[in-house]
Image 1 (spheres, rainbow, N blue to C red):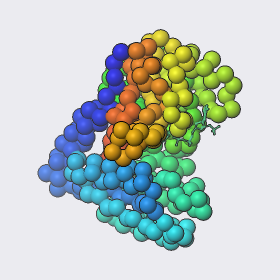
Image 2: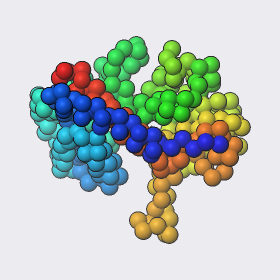
Image 3: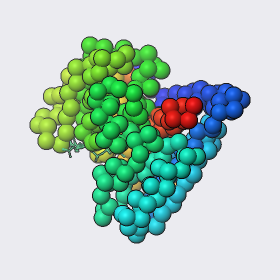
Amino acid sequence: MTILDGKNTALLIQDEIAQEVQTRIQAGKKKPHLAAILVGNDTPSQTYVNGKVEACKRVGFDSTLIHLDENISEENLLLEIQKLNENPQIDGFIVQLPLPKYINVDNVIKHIHPDKDVDGFHPENVGKMNKNQPCYISATPLGILKLLEKYEIQTSGKHCVVVGRSQIVGSPMSILMARNEKIGNCTVTLCHSKTPNLAEFTMQADILVVAIGIPNLITKDMVKEGAIVIDVGINRVEDATKKQGFRLVGDVDYTETAPKCSFITPVPGGVGPMTITALLYNTLLACKWHKD
Ligand code: NDP
């Protein structure tokens, strides 16, 4: 069994990005600049955004964090987005999700200029991804593709089962794994909460991608011997032995399942760091596509 070490792989890719930033600066070109909008005081969201800002520093990007009040109106949020759309210094930006319930997320995403939509959530980018055209691929699926690539995992002809059909992870992942690309060419099954007998499908997976948000839902008896398992889930479970009072676990019961797998991502330290790195990659692309 090999652990797919997202933490180290992310650092390696970040080093490559940092090198490219230095080369750009030496050539008198623009430094990439990522902005993030954070609404309210949700603790996990703050942690994720801070991680993104830290990663920007590490690779030599400029970054801007716009922290907005939790009661901001949708109209005022759209005005902030408009400012970023029009600011030539900002190459790409994200609106950290989730947003407060009264805000229409689809409407917010629609107002991000597709050229600056480095999260790859805008319908134009989603459409281009479906048509296999140059676009920003959403960060978590892109991070997973890069992890599979770095570990030289052969995907062609394999059966990939994706559990979870969210717009940001499961659905794009299922499309990407079916594309006629080096990391792709899988036969794909997409499962969700209405799938009866989930184990019947997960047992068939050569590559199992799980993005559900339920701690340890996938147990060892649901995974085929030798499977490649990508656990996207990040769940907080109470743990009195930890200073914060919780620990992070995935959607897959790692301890029991890992010995059966050929490759598996840990949680934390698997998909999470790759997601941040994919966002940096997209921001560098934005700078190259629209400023060079
Ligand atoms: P969503 O809540 O948007 O989607 C969850 C999906 O899981 C839905 O499609 C749902 O089905 C499906 N589902 C729920 N229960 C079951 C079940 N019992 N059996 C099968 N399918 C089920 O979640 P996200 O995709 O946004 O996130 C999933 C997890 O990944 C979370 O833990 C999140 O924190 C984590 N995450 C991690 C990231 C990283 O960088 N590592 C990035 C993004 C998310 P239905 O559609 O029918 O409701």
